[in-house]
Every structure is written in C-alpha cells, then in structure tokens.
Length: 142
Image (cartoon, rainbow, N blue to C red; front, side, top):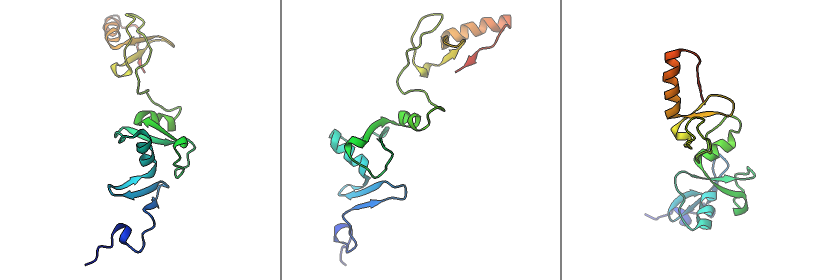
C-alpha cells in the first residue's frame, strides 16, 4: 500500500490550516502546533513552558508577526482579558501588615481592616481571637 500522508498526499496545502477558533495550525515533523507558539519558540530559541501563553496584542488571531506577540503567564493572561473582575497578580505584592510591618505575598492571605490597611494572616487571627472575646466588630477578607 502507498503512504499518502502529509506532503505525499495530493491535497497537501503546505501544512498550514486555520482551526475553528481562528488560529493557524502548522504541521511539521513533530506533529501539529499553533503557529503563534511556534514563532515564539523560534524567537526565544527554546520550548515554551505549559504555563506560558502567547498573547496576540492586536487581537487578530492569525497575525503571527513577532511584533504582535507577547509572552505571558497564564494567570496574567486571564487577568488581561477579564479586567475589572480579577485577579490577584502572579507576583508578590508590596503590602505591609498594619501591626507587625511584615511583607507577605498574596498566597499567604491578606485581610482588609480599613481602606488602605491590611493585616497578615498571623496578626489577623491574633486580632480575631481578641475580638471574639470582646465581640466588638467583624473583619472582611479581601
């Protein structure tokens, strides 16, 4: 039987196709890959990590010029497309605890006590225990 897959097939169109979401798919020896990821990998001269997203700056999904592509972390890409709803940044913030002056990342948890005042998790629970004893006010977690 004859092998008529890939370039040997009579319907071969150069290995570039547009998928149903509007992105260009290319076929090479390694299989099928999104063209914008392939362009970014060649530009960086390394494979992309799973959490790295290639964002089209102008929003046109088949415009794969390197000037139009931007490498982003998955969480930052989500925040970029959902402005106003979102999201905690991927990098640690610059907040300081109002009681102990420690700087912690978002992952440790921050508790808002006033407009620009926050408590770290440790101080929040200390204060919470004293408030529960006195039953005076409630705190809101951000």
